[in-house]
Image (cartoon, rainbow, N blue to C red; front, side, top):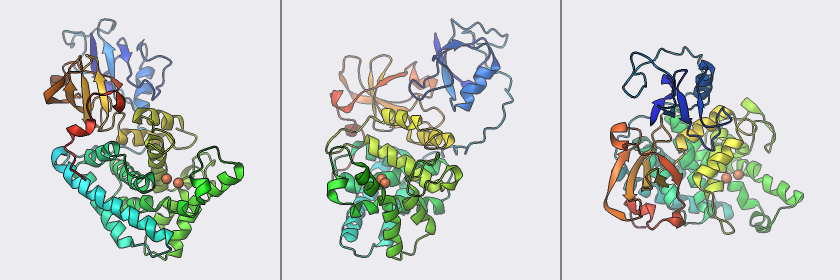
Length: 412
Ligand SMILES: [Fe+2]
Ligand SMILES: [Fe+2]
């Protein structure tokens, strides 16, 4: 019998059947093993794996204070050393329900999208950037994320039909604000981050179209021109003499810098890269990978996160990658998943402490028959999950329903 358990409650002698992270990697060569030493539990915790599935039949651990299925109710503290990583801030409970926040988030998103279009137009014509307007939009995005962070992240997943030129910066802004929030940034820092991310790729407007939109491989010379966009973004902001925090310009200039010095334009390394630029860089890679473009379809979020996980260490500090994944969620709101019983469900919200067990709406039975009243289930609560586990992600084009239908998105 499989049973979900907090990693901190594991004991030597238990059989771990699944560490969950199929692609996210984990400290072991296989996903299952019989625990023979405490070091193995420590490794899981250090990888940020907070819950695992154990097989109670294969477990040899026995204790007096155990439940009938052989799993102890309480275990002694492991006495682990503190991890020197930026702690994820426990997500405060949403003050507003998702249903209530979606229309507000959509309003803020649409307004910011209009501003993003106006911003591009102003830059193309060398006109002044209306920074006050952008700041106002950013503040509204921050307020929405503070009320319920899942609404805007669901929106950017579900509404990918607009032009990438305008949506990309806005999506990077939303993702950065959301992960900045879970990293415990202050509202003032979020405000700087939001503004910097909205401006981060303005320099691309100065890159010739034949290079910017070239469908084939870029030559070395063309790459060099393309790479100049980060410093050009900063130059535009300086030329405009905007009354913004200098960190806004840093976000724009350094969003392609990487931990190992392989980034550009200044080949900064490790801690030389400003924190806000790192958050922008992660969100930038994620949005670029998951967005549909003219020539190719975007990757599913879990594949994009797998790719980003591969950059852990070399391009981004491991702890920042972990926190980013924690804030975006392995199954972001708006994803369609298949459960172990073949039921289909739409992910509605992330559980920060249990990324593998989000809040879902079960929308179809194992034969694909849609329910008239989809059931809302928090997979992290055993009394609600009834043994349901997410088996896999279902691509949107393989579904006989649209995930967006379960979010009551307002008409645009
Ligand atoms: Fe960029
Ligand atoms: Fe970008």
